[in-house]
Image (cartoon, rainbow, N blue to C red; front, top):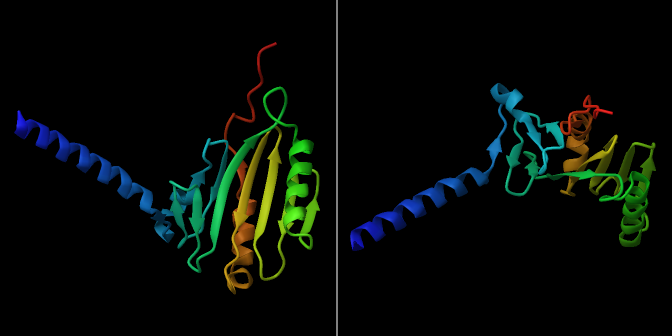
Amino acid sequence: MGQMKILLALLATALLLSGCSAYGGQTISASDIDAGRVQSNRQYCAMTLPAGWTWRPASWAAISPLGTAVAFADYLYGRPMNPEWDEAKRSTIEQVTQRTPDVLISDDGDRLVIDYGPDGGYAVLQRFDRVGCQLTFSRVAGARVQEFAVWQQIIDSLERTSPDPSFTPAP
């Protein structure tokens, strides 16, 4: 009986450790470029990471070769359960400007861009109907100048994945 308990404990430990090892991240290589497509936490959004970036599924973030962290999140909009897009946008702007009064914010209706300046981070909240996809790039000294074009490629790759945008409920 004692050996069975030890065997079960070892099996549970092995399963736990093997599960944790997957959370270390996956570096995207040139041959995996299709594997560079990752989804947000609730799988409403997807983006494509370039070769050399590491995806960390446990934190829903990517890390660039220069150390920039990119948080990836998704949101739903619309009453009765969620705020409307305009409410969420207004709230985000208020929160950001309270913390950082000199931040640059641009709003084109479906995309909110928060720019913390040439040495700072950068955030984008893109609305696709009732789904919002957000990327937040951290500040790493010197990285923005070198990576900004790549950041734009990642932002341009944002897409809504679920619910299926072509789905129309029956009348």
